[in-house]
Image (tube, rainbow, N blue to C red):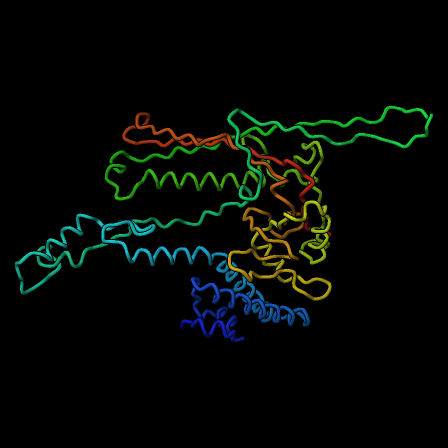
Amino acid sequence: MKHVSRTALLAGSTALPRAIAAGSIRMDASDPKAVLAALQKSFEDFKAANDEKLSKKADVVLDEKVDRINAVVADLQTKAEATVKAMDDMAVKIAAAQVRPGDQIGDLPPTDPEYVNAFKAWMRRDKVSAALQKDTDANGGYLAPIEWDRTITNKLKRVSAIRANARVQSISVAGFKKLFNDRAVGSGWVGETAARPTTTTPGLGSLDFTPGELYANPAISQQLLDDAAIDLEQWLSNEVEGEFSKQEGVAFLSGNGTNKPYGVLTFVTGAANAARHPWGAIATVNTGAAAALTGDGFIDLMYSLPGEFAANAKLYINRLSLGAARKLKDGQGNYLWQPTYVAGQPATLAGAPIVELPDMPVVGAGNVVALYGDMEATYLVVDRIGISVLRDPFTDKPYVHFYTVKRVGGGVYNPEPMRALVVSA
C-alpha cells in the first residue's frame, strides 16, 4: 500500500475515492484537509455510480460497486467528524517530546523511575567493559529492557447519544412529578345583551418520572489490587461508567418503565405507552413504501413537525439505515444526504443534522426507523444526584467488591416536538 501526499489529496484526483475503496491507499486521519477532500471526492464517485445504477436494469456488479463506495463514504464521514480529536491528540504528542524521562506523557504511563535511575548510574560508572551483552544488567542489559503495554485496549461498547441531546434534571429526592396544561380554555363571540354560557376550562394532567436503579458489583482479589502495575480501581470505575452509559442509552430509547426509564419509542402512536402522556402520543409519518425508505417519506417527516420546533430539530437514525438513506434523492434529483464540509460538524439529510443512535431499529416493515425533532424539548432524563460506590472487602474475602449504584429515570416530557418515521406504505 502506498501513502498519499497532502498535495495529491488537495489536487483532487478523480481516482482517489476509487483507490480508497479498493484498499490501495491509506488515509492519514490526522490531516483535516486530506480527510475532507477525500470525503468530497468519494461522495461524488458514489453519486455517479448510484446514478448509473438507477438508470440501468439490475446489475450485480454495479450494485456491489455502489455498496462498496457507500461504505467508503461512511468511513470517511466518521474520520471527518473525528478530525478535531485527532488534532488534539497530535498536540499531546508534540508536547510529550518536551517531557523529561519518568514524567507523565499525555495518556501514556510514566517511565519506571527505578529503571531510569539504574540506567543513568550505569552510564556514569567509570568501569569500562570491552563486551556488552543484554543478559546481564551490569554489562548492558539496561540498554535492552523488556517493555510491556501498561494500557488496556477496550472492545467497542456503543453508547447512545440520547442523554447528550435530551433535557437532564437532577433531583435530590425519590422522584420527580411534572404538571401539564392542555390549554383547552373556551371562548366565543356574543352580542351586547346575549347570554354568556359557561365555557370550557383548561385541564391539568401530571406525569411521574421515577428513577430506576442501575447496579454493578464486580470483584477483584486483594493481592491483585496490591500488586497490579495499573490502577485497577480506576480502570474498573471507568468500565462500570461505560456499562451504565450503555444500559441508559438502551432504556432511554426502548425502556418499558419497569425499574428503568420509559423509552421514547414507547410513546410513539401505537406503542405501549402511547396513552401515558396527557397530551397524547408522538405522531408518525409513513415512508410510503412497505419495506424501504423513500425521499418523499423523509421530506414528509420533516415538514410534519411544527415550525416552532424546527430550529433545534435533528434526525436520529441507525447507521445501517443511514447507509440506505444516503442513496435517496429529492424530486429534482439532488441527493438528500450531504457530507461534512467543516471539521467537527455533522453530516445532514435534507438539511437536518444527523445523530446516529446504534439501538434504533433498522429498515424493516412496520419499524420506527427514524426520529426527527427537538430531543431536548421532547425527552427528560431524571438523575438522582450522585453515584454510590461501596468498597466491600469483608463479604467475600479475599475478594474486594465494588458495589456501584446509580439511580436514573426518564420519559417523554413533551410529545409535540418529535415525529417518528415508520416503514409502511
